[in-house]
Image (cartoon, rainbow, N blue to C red):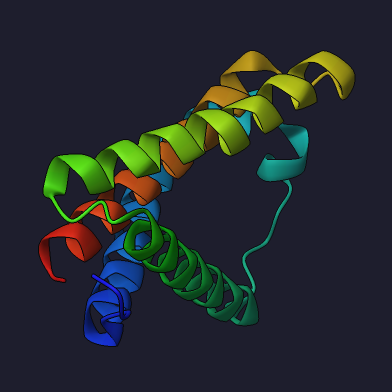
Length: 129
């Protein structure tokens, strides 16, 4: 798994985008109750393009890391995603709870979204190498 499979990256980015849409559809009301900033947001079309770009960058970076670590099995790729989530996303949300007083519920909803995206991307890239 030395080279990045860009078809896998595109598929993983699209899947992560859709999963995130579903995630926030499910948890959006709870998030709105816990976050005034989220409740007051008015969705703008251009922001969806940014979210797609984020998914594409995340999928590319994760595919690169999976390739470099030679995690060439589904379990290995998912393990890389979980480790990255713990080391980056979970630590970030813990810091935001502690220092920025982000409500635990808000942080948990966002952290769950990131865990879902990372695992989904890793699974797709890991299987389709």
